[in-house]
Amino acid sequence: MDYSKSIKTDRLLLRPIAQNDIQNIYNGLSRPDVIKYYGVSFTSLEATEEQMIWYQQLEENETGIWWAVCSLDGQTFYGAGGFNNLSKQHKKAEIGFWLLPEFWGKGLMQEAFPLICNYGFEKLGLNRIEGFVDSENINCKKAVEKLNFKLEGIMRDCEIKDGKPLSIAIYSKLKTD
Image (cartoon, rainbow, N blue to C red; front, side):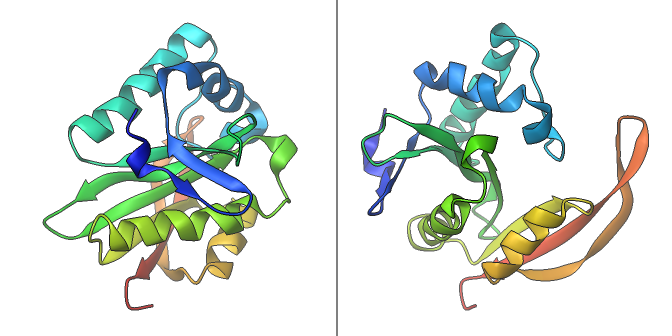
């Protein structure tokens, strides 16, 4: 694991996701309350291996990076966040984030999200960070707006989830914001 990509604050450690995080990833991405507005879900630890491979391929292909969001001592796993769909040519990436429900409302996202953004702007040379939010996910929309992401518009009925059309709100933050 490349710990040079780790980020610390007074209470958080964001470190690269490792294979031994699989149980934590499964614990999050198998819970209906976590995946309600998320694009993937898993019903077994074995199926979660698909997500672990995805995280690894992001780094190998240089198309993104995700971190485990943990307590400063690394003992408590809170969730994960990072970038995917990284385009070096266009200097942009898509940001994503999820937390285990027992850690909702504790300000963790408000603390970790700016760290991830700063890493994108400073270390990855991004000019633009995009966030695609299920238009019904009111809490996430409020959170990204508090972090100075600007709503650019709504892609109406652009995806199908559970057999129903889904609209996506597009947010962005520029390096100059």
